[in-house]
Image (tube, rainbow, N blue to C red):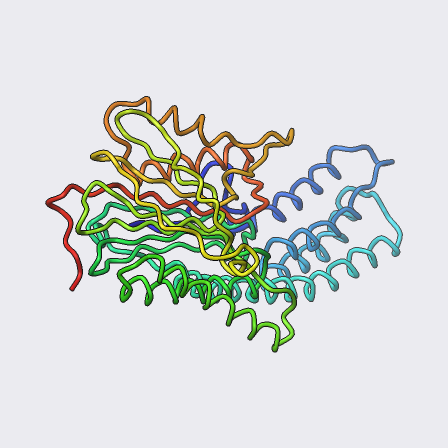
Length: 379
């Protein structure tokens, strides 16, 4: 299984990160431009005071050492240009260049420190993401699976969406869900649910019992959050799918108020029946847990589960992304759709539709029905 968050068209790496090692070329070009303009213009047009832009630009793009260098160049260039071209300017303009140079150095220092802090946060967020959304070996549990996670918060790169694939004695079991809300409380709830799923789904043969454990775990998480003063109670929509080792060609599905999974195969695209269950954390209000449904799957069919970051993605005009239309186009191609290609194509289509402006975290999980001879339960 591949759990990736890589650069796609529409979700590009910032230019200062891609070309940071050559950023000194920009203030150098500004310096050359000021010199050229001052040389090419008549005596009545004195532009040497524009040298103040050189250290300012350097402060925004370069490190402190380069900023100091360009500040000194700007200060030294002012009297040199003033004497060469004979465009005498007042002392006030020279003092403006000196003041700009003096301010640029601390600005550059503060910017570099801020960038280092952001990188530290990104590293912490990446570690958190690896805990909640851990990578899974290819063929884990006897199924072919692939996942993608696209964060709306580019800096943090982690949110309330979660997924996992388990190899259990009862066959492979997968989950994808979305915790209500944002920020650290949503991440904590997602981590609690994933941890609970990893233990309960491995030890409990009945998915209804697993569903009960998930409900109980989020209830206890909400009690803890209330004691800590972290605000409102959380709930989560989710889909749990099991591939029973004793019934190849069938799946067990528990739907906690989530969008129903799509199935792609040789006969096209279909959507599994809606679960009608309440989200995790709201079972008491809804009168109980959602039922476990056993459904048939054809050979080679792929199950795709997505979060609402896909179905609610909008373009500049406010039009929603059409997941079904995208899946129909993929299913029209020759052969079956590989899970890796499926999540890559859908994720890329979402980014193209939104032009990279994601307003919500987006998670996709595709699992292909394994052939009978490849199913190897974990003991």
